[in-house]
Image (cartoon, rainbow, N blue to C red):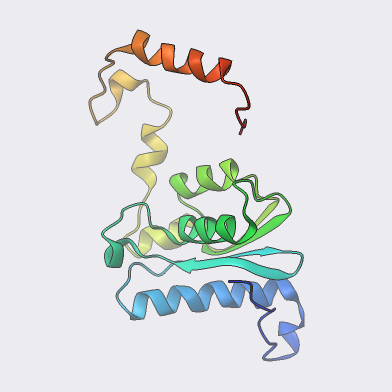
Length: 170
């Protein structure tokens, strides 16, 4: 999916950061207008070249994890043949939600630019405030009940993993 730098449309567009952000915003508009999902778009760039991009596909794919950033991460990882995206810069039309932010950290991206913020998203009906409140709570105090089962059995799998020859750490 390697794409060239988007063409400049005016003098202000000479800044590549602005060009890539314009592309992310355009993807947000495209996804929204086609009914694929909410108004969110994301572009991932490495060495001045778009290596992954996407818009929200939650509705189209019946996938609650198909946020623009996750879609773009998946595409960039496939394009680069790597699960770490070191050296990549992310341009996202809105401040990442907690899930997307965690995914970006796991992907080891270098830098993130965003346009709208979480308050803008909340105003449009995409309010993640409850997640920010839930995350610091202890498991037993969260709104979704958590119950621990078979911890020792699961620990054995982790022990086997740690002893695995040739495992690829990430």
